[in-house]
Image (tube, rainbow, N blue to C red; front, side, top):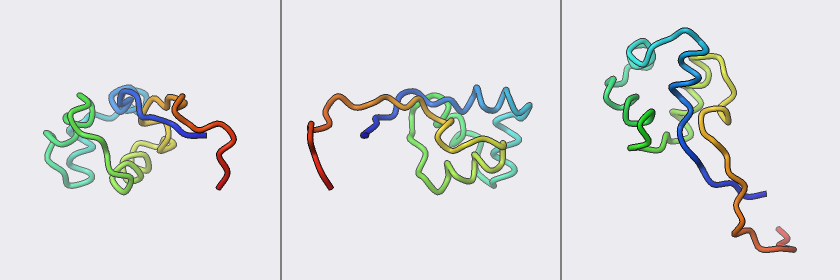
Amino acid sequence: MKFELGRCLLNERLMESGKSAEWLAKNLRYKPERIYDFIENKRVMPLKIAISIADSIGCDVRALYELIPSDNAIKGEKW
């Protein structure tokens, strides 16, 4: 099944973990502005960064974004 990314759920995952965006930025050695860009959907997290973020806050990487099933998938498509 194909998915499209919905809104970023990083802020929700941070609140659940009791961590702040500033803590995450410091922990991963990123500028806080970059973390806020992810939270505000100004940037999409590259997979490598998403994995590091998920590991840092203790969540599954797929929990960082809303995942929307794509209606554009071709029926009967085989790989």
